[in-house]
Amino acid sequence: MLKKVAVESAAEAYLELLASRGVEYFFGNAGTDFAPIIEAFAKRAAEGQVLPRAIIAPHEITAIGMAHGYAMVTGRPQVVMVHVIVGTANALGGIINAARAHAPILVTAGRTPITEDKLLGARNRHIHWAQESFDQGAMVREFVKWDYELRLGGQLETVVDRALAIARSEPQGPVYLTLPRETLSEKLDNLEYYDPPRVGPPAASVADPAAIERAAELLSPAATRSSSPSPRDAIPWQWRRWWRWPTLSACPSSSSRPRI
Image (cartoon, rainbow, N blue to C red):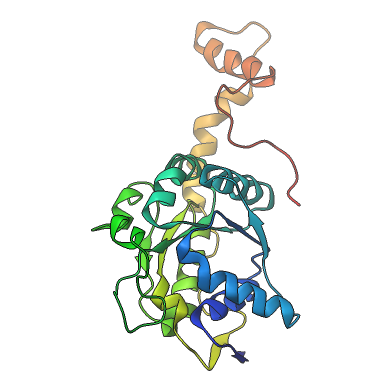
């Protein structure tokens, strides 16, 4: 169903989309690039609109860690925002952890304003020159499934839905989206979007029946043993004994617990 919602900025439209896609929390460590997001949070909260709950973290690695843990427990993608290139650098270790553990996280980062005047959100502090990056996404590209920079407010539905779908597609993992301050500050009158989204993760893949039968044939010797195993039977029998013993993983990333 196509929905139309009144908004005043791309940042406000972004929060509307996240809420409509079931994002419960917005983990963040803020900088000068967050101004449009903070204003959108304040405005929509005052209006009683549904919002992701903002969780302020003292450091980027903490924000990524909280999102990682909640994604692993719930199985749902989480959203993090950090401060431009420097916040991305601080979050990088957590992004690598999320990639290796296949945790679905939409990692977003502000981007130093592109323009020097005329546009709302343009550079207005010396740090906006010092924190410029030739290719901000290059820092994380090896460890994320997809990265992109939002160019226009009109792209929001397409970009957000694609990011969440890719993060949730197997093998799951983090994606990275940069959000320039001028783009977040872009004035909009309304947001039109589809609910439920038109883009989602692919359906679960199903193994070929013939391949399952062949695997069963290969594994069947391990499922039976004689009372006096011969050397030929010994290895499968040892596997069976080992499988019943408790095991300890030196670097666990998940456990067999129900999701909430």
